[in-house]
Length: 300
View 1 (spheres, rainbow, N blue to C red):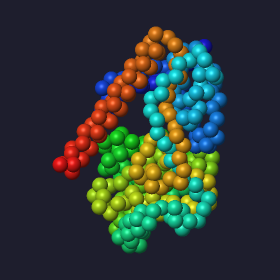
View 2 (cartoon, one colour):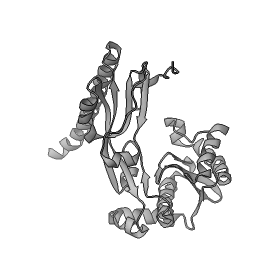
View 3 (cartoon, one colour):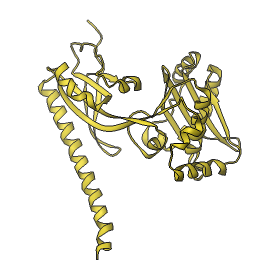
View 4 (tube, rainbow, N blue to C red):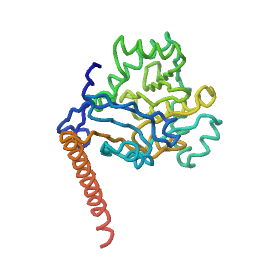
């Protein structure tokens, strides 16, 4: 008999606040960017006996209909929809910048010039990654990502050993922007094949007015396009202004649950869907109300 499948947490959230959590034994499967670009339904291993179903992340939205045909005994519950942005790295940096609006190019270059001579260091070997981890943790401990989103750079000997193992295979990059010799912003990007993943990032709020994250991303993209070691930079799940700015393409994706139709699973799936739908409706209503408050005085 195989080991019991650890439970996956399925939260009911409003913004960053979690109101309640379900726990179901799910088989997790996150699609790589290469799989997403293929547009094909991924191969899934058979469900173990104790599993409630699958938890699929970053599945191309066009594949959802095929799930019902491929897995007719399971029920589909879509949790969220978003665009997964990525940047092609097989081009000249100036050609890449030419794809930005003139206003965005001007703003980016102004922010870079404001810092003068940039001190951006890249880290890739096991010894270099140890130095990166030390200085990046200084930034992460003070960053918004760690303090408010619980998404900081992992700490401890085990996390460092995992990063160094990737470095030994040339499968990770780290960058730090230093300002007056002090670490101001970092980016950690492990690799899946020839794709780098936008995994952990942050900046010290003391340097916020210098836009250190934007300046670092600018230099990172320049270095990667000069190096030509990797083909793509994956901005991963979710959307945002920063990702949209730097991406050269995107895939419409969904995160979903594919569940056995037991009473407990169906209850959890329908409750999660209903809750997510109610939150989305409330957000649209709030946005409409804000718009009305702006427009109504203009119409008088």
